[in-house]
Amino acid sequence: MELAEGTELAAQAQSGLLTLEQPATTGRKKRSLKIGVPLEVLNEERRVALSPAGAAVLTAAGHEVLVEAGAGDAAHFSDVQYTAEGAEIAFSRADLYAKSQVIAKVAPPAGDELDLLREKQILISALHLGMMN
Image 1 (spheres, rainbow, N blue to C red):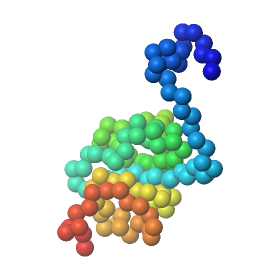
Image 2 (image 1 turned 120 degrees about the vertical axis):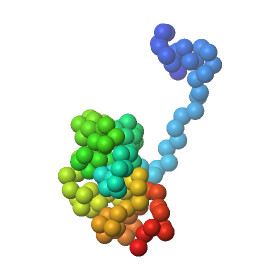
Image 3 (image 1 turned 60 degrees about the vertical axis):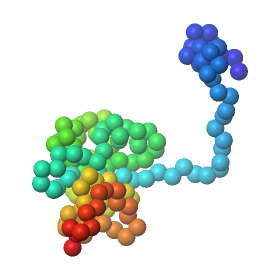
Image 4 (image 1 turned 45 degrees about the vertical axis):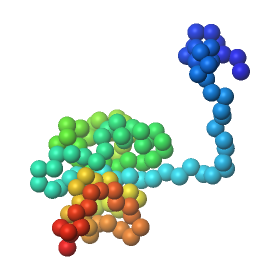
């Protein structure tokens, strides 16, 4: 492999830091997930489960990210920041839950959110089982 002089790869090769490994092809089709990030509804919860930078990482890996409109506002992340990083804005909580395979939340799901969860849908969240009815 011939590297153009002055490139970063050439510098790494010269210093001995360039590895010779190549990605193996497995023949498996890459899976993508539809990840939903709803607006947190518990009192005084200002956090959001995924930042725009996190959305960028997930979309770059081929996943779809849906963020409920206004979900990042309390954490000072705008809907525009999410869409700039490849996320889609969902204007309805029911729509977000219906389209998502994975739901990422900070706080445990509230009563109305429990009704929106579907069988085999994955919930990533803190759970306070003693508080749930």
